[in-house]
Length: 206
Image (cartoon, rainbow, N blue to C red):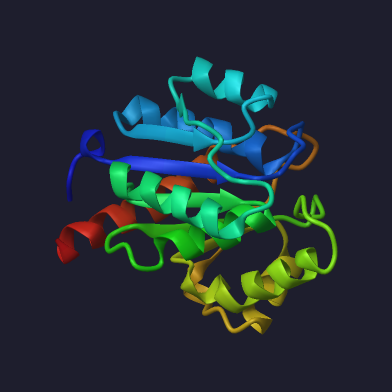
């Protein structure tokens, strides 16, 4: 397996709110651990979000917000070019728009795995209006099976994802620490275990 110093991971969120208990907050210790291991870690988020400054302080590269609010095709094209340029082991997304675009952009890129985090702590809403919102959600549901791994924050979501036809081995139950918004060390370990498998798989396919 290649050393962490030869790997890149891209995190993408289109959620407009970042706060205690959010997926984005729980990603921060994961991204920090990857940086400490020597990996290149990049985050695509709204440049106005305080998440960007916190991530930078951990050594994460915050990329330009390349997702176009109204043009899905342009957003897909921009994200695909970004992934082609940096060749990450995985693009890890959260938020309906980010999930859809990450799967779409990475679909024909060998070696780039898509990892998704679903949470019932937020609405996972898009920034679009009906009927575009409903259409994007339908495409997201249809494409979820292409994810290499799906992190979920509750047992209820495990059931929903399995009902959508996702095999159990792809689902990672990653509940928040009770009584705290901080990500426990066990969660960081779960993420690293998935990423380690993806790094190993990429080495076998290259």
